Image (tube, rainbow, N blue to C red; front, side, top):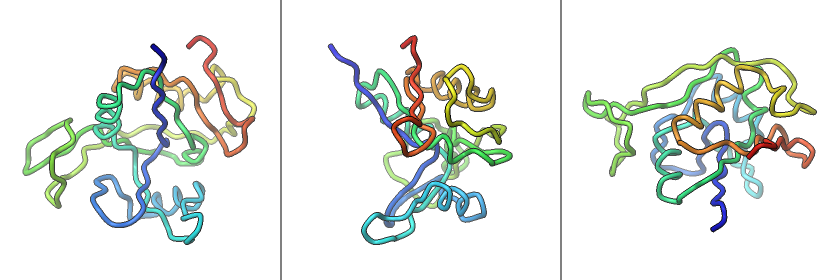
Length: 166
């Protein structure tokens, strides 16, 4: 059997209306939108931006049988002093790490904060990535139980970092 590859951004986006628990309405959201060029290709419409939603990523990995992950847009997080990942939700005061059947206004994300980095990520091997980015990747691997095989640090083909040992 072959691998099932799951591709995700280092942060979340959404087009159009609907639930988006980790959506940012502050300068961090605008930063991700601008630096990540998060605008519709044909309409130019702004994409909604937010922090990575770990319960949603874990659910996607599980239902699709993902065996390797590819993280895109890691470079977009460069320059943030700190960033967050939703690790759970509080619903009516109760903590859950599961994606709820129904999203509503009572769902509040619970975050884990990570240190950012300022280093330029181009022309780096996986081993030479900033320690804080590697910590983020290791966290994702631990939470999902799946290795991050590729990290994309820009739109060009030569800005794709492969982990040689996977």
